[in-house]
Image (cartoon, rainbow over all chains, first blue to last red; front, side, top):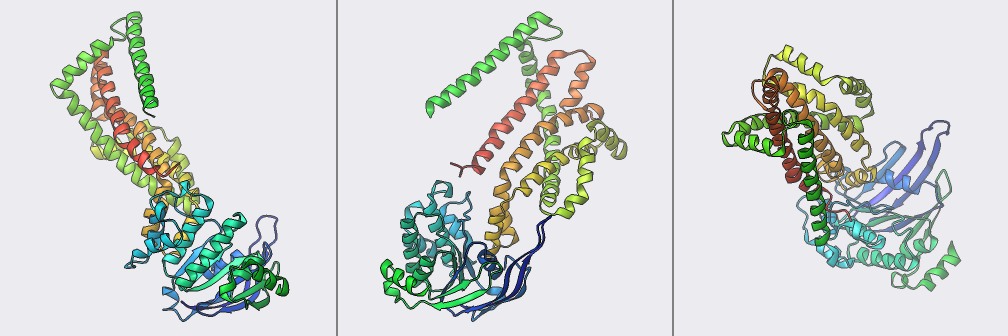
Length: 238
Length: 251
C-alpha cells in the first residue's frame, strides 16, 4: 500500500457551446498516509468524482500533481476503483469479471476468497444482468480488492441503495479492509457514512472544490458499527 | 418452451407449404414455360446435383463470396471502428464513404474488369468495394456507441490494448458485427452473381447467364434456389449460433 499526496492547482472544464468554462477544483491539497481510510466529503457538484478521476489517471487535463509514495513506482502502482455504478462487463460472469482484472501471475484463489467474503460464492457463474443492484455493488467491491491495490478509490459506491443494504455493505467494506488493508480514498456526500468509515474526513467546499477542513475521526474502530456512537460523534463534530 | 418451439416450427412449415402451393398455382396460371412447377425445378436440381455440375458452380461462387466477405469485413471493420473512435479519421473518410455508398455496383465491376482483367482479383475487389462502405457505416455506429464507463474501467485496471479489445470492445461490438455479417452475406452473393455474369466462365452467375440465353427457366430457378439454400445453411448453421453465443448473457 502507498501514501498519496494530492496537489491540484486548477482543474477546469472547457466551455461547451454557450456555457462558460467551469472551474471544478482549485488549490486542492491533502495527503493520505499508507493504510489510511480517508473520506472526501462535499456537496453534490463540488468535484469529488473529478478528483477521483484525476487520482486514477483517467483525467490528466489539470494543473498540479498527484504523487503516490511508498509503492514500487508511479508506473507500477496498482489501483482499485469502485465506481458510482458497478461497471461490470455484462457478458462476463461474476467470477470472470473479477478474474479479468487480476495482474499476470497473480494467485487466482483470491477470487474465491473475495467471493466468499462478499457472500457471492453461489453466484460466481451468474451474469451481472441477473444480479440485484446490491449484489452488483458487492461484485464491484470484490473486484476492486482483488488486485490487492496500493490505493483503493471509491466513488459513492453505496449511493441509491436502501439504508439497510448500504449499511450492510459498509460493514462488509470495513471487514474486507481489515483483512486486506490498503489506502482508501472514499468520496461521499453522506456525513454519517464518512464518520462511520474514515480515519480522517477531508471536507470540500462547493464548486470550485477546495479543502475546507480536515477532521480526524476518533471513534474506535470496534465501535464503528454502533450507529449511536457514530451519530453522537457526527453531531458533535460536523 | 418445447410447445412454443413446436408451434414456431409448425408455423414455418405451414408458411413454406403455402409458398410451394402458390408457386404451383402460379405455374398453372402463367404456364409451364414462364414459371415451371416446383416438381420440374426439383427434377432439374437433382439432375444437376447428381452429375456434379451444380456442386462445382455453387462451390466456385461460394469461394468468391467467402473471399469477398473476408476482405470486405476486415477492411470495413477497421475503417468503421477507426471512424467511430477518432473524429479526425471520420472527417477524413466520411466523404469517401458517401461516394462509395452511392457508387453503382455495375460501374465498380466494369472498372475492375478493365483495370485488373477478367481475374479473380477483379471479382473480389469489385465485390469488396461495394460492401466495405455498408460494413464501415454499421461498425462506425457501433464504435460510437461504445460504453465509455467500461473503457475507463479497463484503463483503471490496466487491461492494455489487446485485453481491452478482446474483453471490452469486441463483445460490445458483437451485435454490430453480426448485423454487418448478416447484411454482408445477403448483399455479397447477389453482387457476386452479377460480377460472374459479366466476366467469368464459371459460377452460379455464369450458369444463370447461360440458361438465360437458352430461355431455360427451370435451370435458372434450380441454381438460384440451390444457392439460397446454401446461404440459409450459413445463416442457421453459423450466424445464428454465433449470435446466440454473443448474446447469451442477456436476460
